[in-house]
Amino acid sequence: MDLFLNLDTEYVTRERRGAGSNTDLRLNQGDNRKIRLFLTKSIAGPELIEFVGLPAPYTLIQLAGRKAYDLEGDELFYQGVWTQTTVTLDEGTDSEVDVTCYEAMLSTRTETIDTLMGEDATAVQEANILWSITLTDGDEAEWTVVPRGAGVMFRDIRRGEAAPTDLPPSYPESDQIAPITGVNFRFHNPGSGYVFQVKNTSTSKWHTVTIEGATGSEVFVLEAGV
Image 1 (spheres, one colour):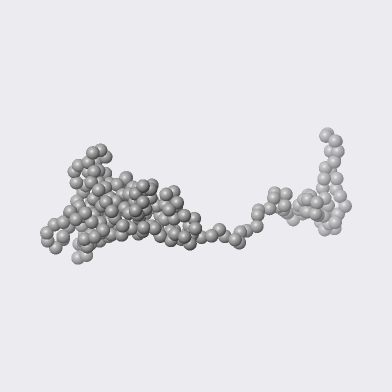
Image 2: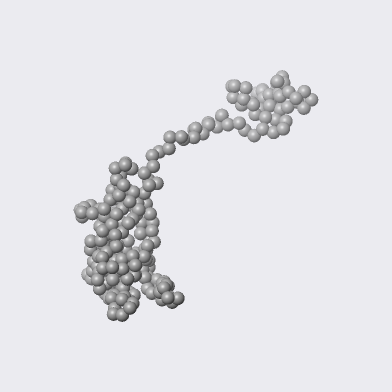
């Protein structure tokens, strides 16, 4: 999402030469969205604006939001770490211009947003929010360029789904899972649990194999074929 902040008019728009009013932010619960913030100043001429960097003495940008008219509540989202970068914008007349902007990932995956939207998907579909943009030097200098921006936080429809009712059956216990069976051997369950059987290739009957006897005197027992 691209935002263009005019430092002269103190308005944020989605278009670089947007009208003189703040853009309504439309955010979705649970997103992690890339924001590109462009700083501009008004100039005379057909361009109307020029792109600028952070003006002195400001070095930091803070974007914050909270529930509308609930200034005592916790912040819904906050981003104070931005990366300065240069991007190329299309001028629309087969020309391009390299300008400075500030990038950040704005997360709406916060507990305060989840609390605001609640767990009842039919109760709150959207909530009005206020947002602000502040420039600061991290100490005394601070300028809240946009003190009261309007916006809407939408419920993430993926978080509004009821728990599925057609759940698969529980995974069987280990003693109920048939082990590997080969050509002339198998693990057979006659009803009292699995036993190991080998096949008489002459009669095609299966014989259960067990071991009996005290320690040191063990013998194989081959039961009658079935």
